[in-house]
Image (cartoon, rainbow, N blue to C red; front, top):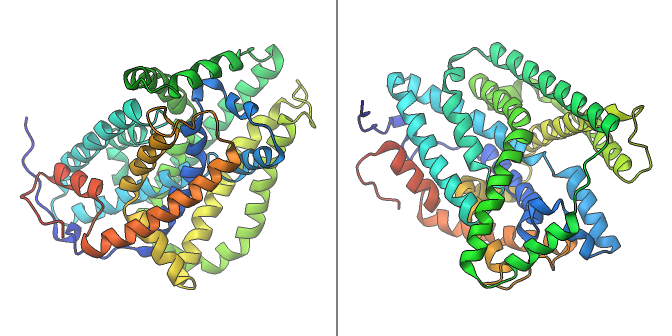
Length: 404
């Protein structure tokens, strides 16, 4: 059965009122994602972070650890939360107009996102997250109809299941030992490939790396991201602005101790990695606790703290700048990969395997600053980013509409 073309509901037309504080939070998360992805842009996933060992130095080591503690796993959780929240808001729009077509709308929207994700992963960046979001959106459409309490209970169950699996894996690792990976040899091979100017060799290697990365990403991110997806869906149904206004004093009270606890748990994992705490059968539980505990608490604090700051209106300029980048998050996310390929691949500037984490962080700041400026200029003339516009048109299959 071929679904009919979808009309544009009045509540979803380009004149709809956007929540600037949510767009600003999305822009903030976009910068965090760039910080984490930069490692994969300049060195291979398959090399197990090996190329950092080529470029020693205190600034490099400090940048690696700070990014790992404050960014890795945290910002992809923020994006998962916003993805679920957006899905719930779309359901609320459609439920008031033509709810029977909502399923077709989401399937079309996620199908387009899946195609973009596969192309992105195979050609530009093996660590693509769009594919995962598309699959998650397709397979969980039915959950958007559930009550807020049901979504929260399900999120708690998935979190406990994930934590249990991590505990089991950590125990087995401590008991039976870690596998010995020849990371230096693997890293050398990837550096040789990506520093070459052979576009087809790079592309075929990218596809191989994408196949490896997508398996590891789905295994490592599926449970954790699904928890935040459910939390975002629950927040979207309850109303994010209403939640902030209703519980603002409580959130402000618990935010600092929760953030400090999350940081402490994340730092404990690094302490163990450095050998200051032994990874033994007696301490096997620490590594398993620090990831779901530290990452979850810090991500929740980023969501809550960012929403409170941006919603308060105290930093209007920063909110406006970040919201411009967040409103074009899909375009900016893909553009980051394009720029990274130009910088690091052999057919570009050839800096692959030659860039430290510290230098990569400087590149992140410069690139994101440029994206903020370009986003503001673009949105002065157009309502959406170029990829967002294409995504919207393909999802609705409506009549041609001016982007201006």
